[in-house]
Length: 269
Image (cartoon, rainbow, N blue to C red; front, side, top):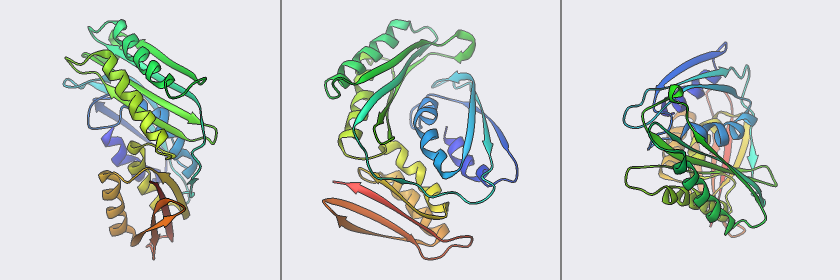
């Protein structure tokens, strides 16, 4: 998925549709799971005016890899549109996908899903929680793997994710609880997006025409790095301030080779 993150912003400005075939791990550590990309990142980034589709041919897991996914990216044709995601709202529903592949039995997927649901219901009462439990077909997966991806939708349309991968020696219940805790922590922070999505939006916010605003919990190191690079490449400048008990990180583009750019990240305390 890291290769997709690198190529996607470039392909958006291509003269015609672009198709990539990525091979490797679709669900691996140190990168977003492909399920997170499709369930969380895709609907959040589309309001910028970018569109892509993904066909998962095979899923691949550490250490074998072997997965294959076809991404088709449409050009934006003009400029990216600014976005504003400032009101988190109350959670109205949670969906998820708990999977196993290879020699792992389906009961592992049930264990992750059940543990996640129990943990989530302790915080989100009377909310519909639907976690799909899947045993990947042998011909559509390479190697052994397991994991869970969750996404909470709020009344204001925010999408906040949480995910975890199974590991040898780690109980399925622990994996499910880890993903649930990640989601709960993000929601309770008052942010509109989770910590693993914020850094992915910076480049699109920097390239959009106009002012974009997104409320986050606190900038991760990846987000700070993305902002630093955006400053180098688009002449942006940022400053910190306080706004009604929130710390705000504002980045204003002084000038840009192609267009004026201004964006703002609201950081909750």
